[in-house]
Length: 229
View 1: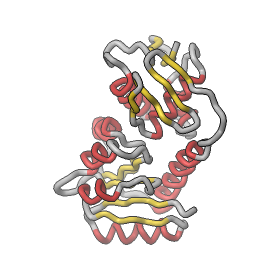
View 2: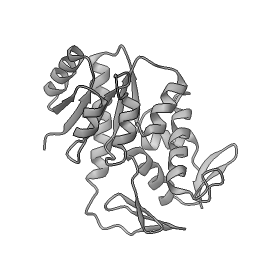
View 3: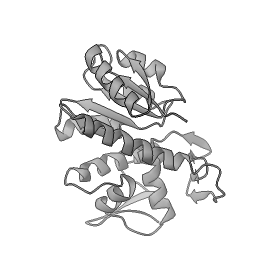
């Protein structure tokens, strides 16, 4: 089945270039002219979302926050901002990756293909017979990628879910940020990747912990990394 990508940018020329590029790759492209329209069009049929950060009215980061209330599809930001604090803001809103402008067509295609491959591999595991992973106050349904906290569904992003599953399936094993990044992103670890992992862990704790400042599920192993006991 043809994968569907939602692309939001207020510049019609950029939308046209990206649409042609991704269509040639075999993807169906749904366009949005701003963040508000992106939120409206981000339904369950969308496999990947690409958001320009600087859009009038509703920025890509703001749109991402709203989209995350209803969709776990991976989100890629396109931005001219490359500082760590800008990336942190995007990750905190629920974004999965960043591509800094200007970028090449090869770079965009590689990033899109990698994100969709990771997402669809995990989606494709649905229906397999796997036991529920039970943690204090949490249930992880690995066959449907659902997570419940005290009986209530918690909506996680694709990256958040896979970090949680990695730690939950290997309880009492400590993972460094490098271990987590290379296992979840399936890419070589860079210095900047350390902050990326930390932001996603922080987001997970906000959603799963009663007191994120004193986590009981995903624990810090000082000087080493993270684990679930």
